[in-house]
Length: 311
Length: 309
Image 1 (cartoon, rainbow over the protein chains, first blue to last red):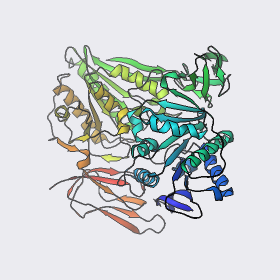
Image 2: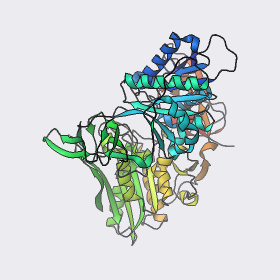
Image 3: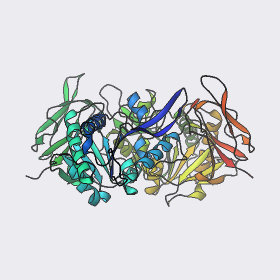
């Protein structure tokens, strides 16, 4: 059933609204567990669109196995999705930096408060992101260090490739995931693929994992896969590769490849002079889990991240 | 006057990105003044350009105190300014949400780190800032309550108001917050406008800044204060919101005195032309802020009023 999570009038003849689709078993007992799938906080991240579609499609094909509540929120920032904007049009701050919102605040803060109000109490929330337009990521879950005891076991069931336990940062206290975890709603942040695109293989992989989590929670009693064992790491094992010069990044290595120390990842070139400005090599043996997709780089731009693997 | 390049970054097709600082006097790093951090902060750029001009005259007349120095950085983001964008041209990130920066990080983290390295050791830091909600303000000095804020020093600005703000998580990466964490006495200065020049408050800011520097014994400058500066907590002001969207037609502007019930603005139906809501003053007071968007979103903050008895 399609429901409205938040709605308000826009200035000229249009209603702003955030919608969700709630699927329930045919017979409700009132004791059902609830899983919430949210995406589209950043309007240029579209990987979650396919996940929402595919999840709903598979559930509807086997509705008899649904034993709990599934809430799907495909676009928390519908104006951003429509205008290919990462943020909310007409609002300066990143939408994922204003949670838990404020019912008496600006339109964006009111919307954020409505979203939290609707999501709280879920037995599991999965917040799907897609890197950005610049970088391609393998399927991964990022967990704040303070929540790792509770969230890592849940994340391991989602059939993703990698779990990154990262350090805390004050600025991240205003994300949707932090705010929900803070009020006792376990929330996992998925990053995968690349902005403005859909990578079906990642989408299908995650949907398989969501069914596993649903079965664990008692929301699904159909067949599920055995989830893959993800790599788990902390910040110290991750090497960041940043451009030392501005130019055009031309890739040599493939994304998601195991690299040897010294292996060539790519060049930053100058098309005006025909010169190679920087050759980028792997600083260690490891997995190239982030790789730049968008070729134009300014000095400092991230071109890749490698998860170091001990030989 | 000594013009220095504080940070430089090459581009593949554009002229190099440079952040320039103008240093007056010699000796201890007494005060640093930062202008435009975003590409639309034209008023902030203009005020700093006037300060460079005036401090140059003061220095030529021997008016910088011995052993003291002042640096003015009129613009930290000319790349965005020259292409009409508020944030960084390629990835839309905000330099003022990247402090203290990271030398090995992404582009705007590096810019922030490069600037911060040059300015973090100043005893006093002033930033001409703009708010994330666009509109016209009464001139004020804003300080964040970090435990290192200096309210008494803030009151020595000849500005009508000092506003105290409790920092939110997203404030922790601003220059003001990080200056304070690094033990610089930091003050954000707000005048009436951002995208366009408001000459009256630009002159007020220029004079108040020079007078402040004189009171801190950094320069010689004659000035007679005109304001009895009032201190307010940001949350003490009365917010006035619109519960409807539409065309915003203000009847009252910033600095207007209003009585309870006065009509502040009309919200007009964009198709049928009639007034769908009259926004009225909830109390007697002075208008501190009025938003400046013609098309109004519902729940938008439209006014802030300083309540008066």
